[in-house]
Length: 211
Image 1: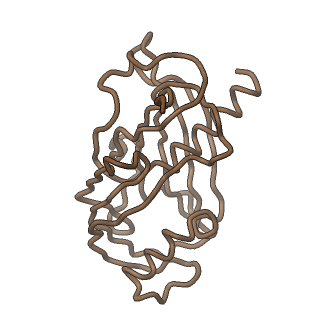
Image 2: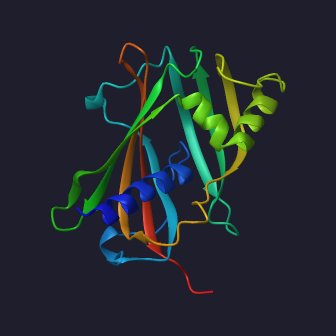
């Protein structure tokens, strides 16, 4: 894979994460085979977000769990989502943790996910989250910490997330991406290299609609 394609794949991965919301949701086209090939102006549609299979050995509900996940997309804004979920965390989520992301692409030829298109490790994830999405960080503070959460770590919490509205727009400077169906496997890893939680987020990168 050439450097240009790798850069676009890396950007696609970041856009997948921007659109990713922990939820069980089906959106977008019905069949991956209908997605055209090529690279060009795009839109991203979140298709699903599910807990990783048990074979990943990546569920520690005594430390972190997300249940009863549901997301709905705003019919007037394709990048605005309303999330409902039950969240329980007994950890101090600070910068000692890391997030590992592996992006694969669906292949109609093999009828399965290809080898890794892109891998990324996010170090200092709490600070990265606050820096890149201060709006959501403040929402979390206001809704679940009485506005008292001003900085990392994100302390333990049990919360019923109800009608939480967020946006996941791709960066405005990104003009083109490769089309296709992509899966981001996202893992939360602690300092002992133990995986606490894992989600598979699937999105379609589709040609941009004509205005």
